[in-house]
Image (tube, rainbow, N blue to C red; front, side, top):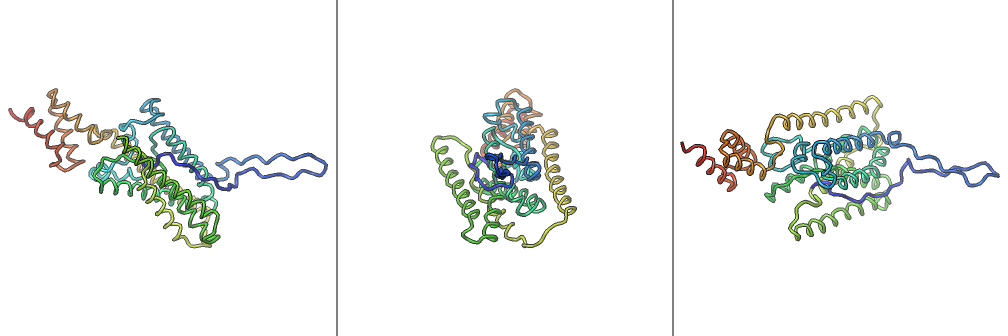
Length: 331
């Protein structure tokens, strides 16, 4: 899955406690209270809230068992990015919605911790008007990278998680550090080390999972594409330019509307298409069962949905189609 649990970097934050001097004659003074995230980084706070709200809705739909691991049906229903559906059912909105969907409590917890660490730094450095489009574009780039890699490999690939977008923030922070402090920037070195750790862990974990016959793991294609997109976008920013408050608000509202529009398209497809929550294997099983019980109407619909996901000459489709013709069209 895109966005497998990732370790978070530790950056200096404007919200960190600051020592306060006391008047002479007093003991050691108290530390200033940490400002709330919604006050110091409102966009980062809003993104975290949206992710948590979506995860809560996933749990409500799929049950508390989703804390350990969400079912593929729930992930599909909420806009997970599956290669075949995205490319062949024109589900391009899932390139964005999948960035707000998570596979387990551990998954979202690690991603939100990472976002809490890096988001405020980028938000204060470049402002909400730059960070909002950066986050969405990096997330879409990460999903696109995952989709492209899945298409090349021919694997069934269901990708979810915010880590592609978060890696975009890290890539942007790396560029910011370089442009402000040069190649010896501590921020640049920290971000570079963080990305190297993510990719190294991804390779090791994915290898071990495949060695054990399991699926899932880190989606390095999404991480790499997100980081590259974030760095490229940040490199294109012009230093010294700033947006008015009104312009910043409009840009954030536009990004929110685009995200909401993608979510509404997912909801509409999920509610109107009986096969929206089924992947390739599940559709094959559905069609096979319908044929076995003589439900030719639903079998025909399931077979048509299969042909949307894969080529008609695919062995799985050909087998289902032969069974359908034998049971439903021989008379």
